[in-house]
Length: 394
Image (cartoon, rainbow, N blue to C red):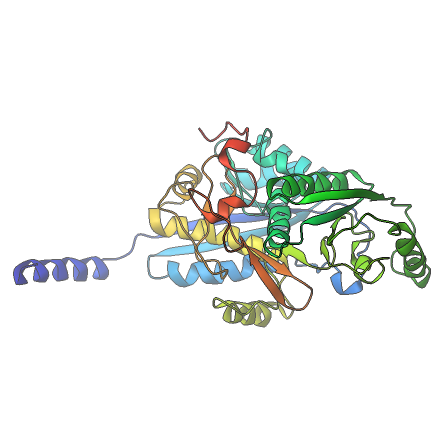
């Protein structure tokens, strides 16, 4: 480059930096649909009132830090509603001109809200893990920041395959979400070449899970229930209802590693993670909220950072423009998990590493070393392009 050209480029840069930034107000919302649920087995898992909303507060800070240099401001509304109130709350947000909406809801409510919102809104799914949402029931106006159940199952089974623990005993609960999760593990077992030696179903009788009577009953039931199993290397627990899996590791008949819903669990994030700059992120969250982070907090934070990054790169706040950019090859976002995350353009699922967490430390991260893919190793987790029947992103 000649000296004159360099001087011209420098002058252009000075003019660009000194030009007044165009003001842009970015308005978003987090809509949390709360459904009645049983108390968790452990009181340590009690759901905080600001679940998800705490992640939104941190995301607004992070987006605002960058935005202030570009004349961008970020404001996020947070609403907690019942399923009966959800459609009215959505209508109110759309009437206010808020078309960027992070949703914490189950599959049924998410689909209902996405269909009601229509093409003029962008919905970011920060909770629902159902495979169908990335498959036959996908929606063009929905991007999935929450990982799917197949992604989580693949992450665990991939680790077992890497360890050469090839014989799996699957124990699933009796409720529909448990059986759906069991299907994800069966698929993962077949995908990565493990052998499913036996399946068992633990019946949810509706008894107490937290009182002395509850855990004593489980302590007596589980070893007998697990007795006489075929020879196996690992126990995979599919317990989306949180009924029995946390008890499994120390109540087996044959001592074996437990993975899935108990023991070693696949998660998007956890409070013990310190690698890849996560320590600073964790401290900022804890200073802001006074508690440790949960997966829903991280997923809401990540969804709003997707919006913030897309706004910075496009200079727009229009839902359609942000969706198109997020699905493009130009999009990537740092997520404190060792590598940038991107979206799958065939079903709107965010590619991301899955952490394997034992309740105290980060044991491993999937995808595991040696599992290759023609596009990205992250696409070894969950539904790959040929496996998804989603036709809304063509």
